[in-house]
Length: 583
Image (tube, rainbow, N blue to C red; front, side, top):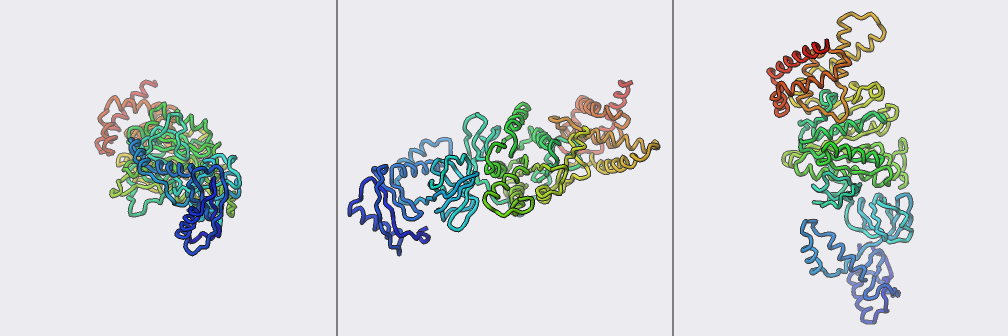
């Protein structure tokens, strides 16, 4: 710091003019601290500094006033370990504390507006560091320029004016993390906003952390079941995978993520929902739905609503990921939903344009790809040496008129390990979840399925592909043979089975039973419009007739040939009874 200080005058502020002896002590201190610099000591009266002084040498400030010494003490107490029994630590810190002569680097606000402040004087500040303004508002260094820096603000900028002082904290922007966050709703800085009191934090994690290296990862080979038959059978998601949910507005993207969260009940998975740019009422309704269904106990909601600043919306997904990493590094499994990254990119675009960065395609800055890649790369399945924990990411992207070739959708598609494309026409026709089987893909595939699911779902994708081709062909012909009609009926029955009510995730044994019965044409003679109701009755009937079979599939994840034959036998018996009742 001293080598960068080119000041020629040292300003001494105090209530009374210093004596000759005091001036000599100041001169000796300056000579020791700034060797080789000829500094002139100039005194200025400041009646507010009774019992102390403040010495300013360029950007360095030695605040020995009562307020400055109390600020040092407060920083010492804030740096204490955040443990349960903090009172003895505070008492010891006060007893051992002595004011230091360490300079505090201060800066000056040049301009402020639109959540951006330009600051001069903080030459040693680093990217991502937290700064504190004179009115208590905090900000984060976002851009470094010659002689000045730009800072995004995490609060109301109306109380900040040009000329205000800014001080460094030496801390990189971060969030508190810990077990106490389970069941809570917090903002992008980790502060509770649910009215349930303060949260006891176990640690403090930076919001930006390097992604795990290749050596620290292991293959994705354990299923993260969504409870949705259309996804678990055709596009399985593994623990540590990043599966994009993409589609137009109001096509059920959040509903898919919410059902996935509900399906983790009792599976020791921590679920984190990051709301970016959503209406506060929508997030409150989602939290209430989770609470009513007993899911908030293992959930954390990080909310940067539409009314929050662009800087808070920008930092929210990184904060949520840091909270998830705390659990992942403890060897636990985490599911994190980003809803949605389209609004995240828009918030970052707004900040970038205010920072005068050059706009590129669709006015997004050139590093918008890096914005999401450094976020999503943090999701991984850690190696056993690192604890074996995992973090599975479900980013959501909103498209316009189904255009998946737009800038942000193509960016995120290329980062993730597959996508679930939700189509508007399917949604409005009643096919929900509206997963387009042709455009959706999982690049992990069968590695993320249990052996039971893999065996049960074997030919389903091929059967659906044949049905789609035949459906298009038969639009031009009214005279169909019996074999073609039967194939169409079978395909329609499969599509109807893929319809699923919201908040009704299926367990593994329910999915396996449904697939074995359907793909072996056991349900084909049931009218298409009755299949959904018959499926529910069949699953309840299985639970009564052979609960041991259901439990065995859930616990082992295996489907033996004997179990398969038992499913077919029971399913045929059920269909016969169902048809008899219908008559």
